[in-house]
Amino acid sequence: GEKKAAQRQHDEHCASVLSTLFHQLSGDRRLRLLGKLAEDDMSKLQKLLQLHRTYAAAVEAAEVAAARESDAEEEDEADAEERAYLARMEAGSYTLQLVDVCLCYAATAKNKQLRQQVLHGLYEDGFSLHDIWANAFDHIKSFGIDTVDAVQRKQTEELGKEVEKLLQKYTTVKEEGADAEAEQE
Picture 1 (cartoon, one colour):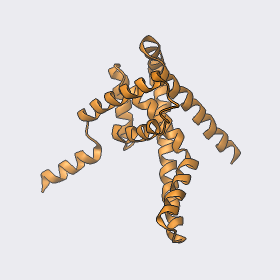
Picture 2 (cartoon, rainbow, N blue to C red):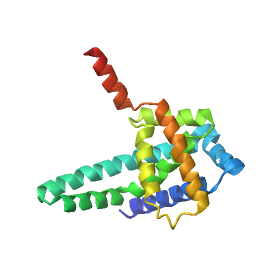
Picture 3 (tube, rainbow, N blue to C red):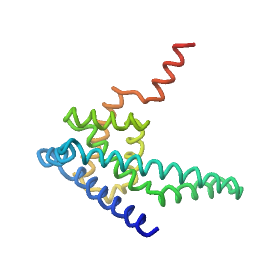
Picture 4 (cartoon, helix red, strand yellow):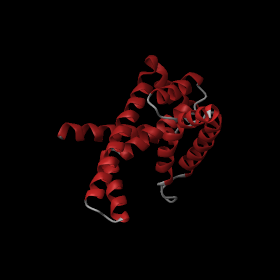
């Protein structure tokens, strides 16, 4: 009820502030922010990964429930898509996108330990960098070109380039599984 809604709002506000800091800070200031994620045995990074798990599960459950309702009511495709979109947003899709932007910044940090912790944490939960980049990219492309200042535009472009470099290095769990199956045949 009320407590859960307040927690979701708190999570969204915190993720929004952190995401904005990543977009706006550069150089030593960004390094200090990344250092905060790494301190105390990476407890703050673990919290971000936990938020990703929580909101990814909630969004997925909302999509499934919306699809079930749309099938039961035999809605047309446009109504079903709108129902699914609204269900995702209500479940915390925006918060998930913000958290994933922050995780992308952590994954592309020059701090190898931080990057490995993000990738390992995602892998343990059945996610990949591809998953979080898809969410982060959805968030980034939702910015109106007029609403983004030059600093944020530059930072997000650099983030995209760094994530793409990492994506070229790593394959998703699904691709590895498909490759293993193909080799067995």
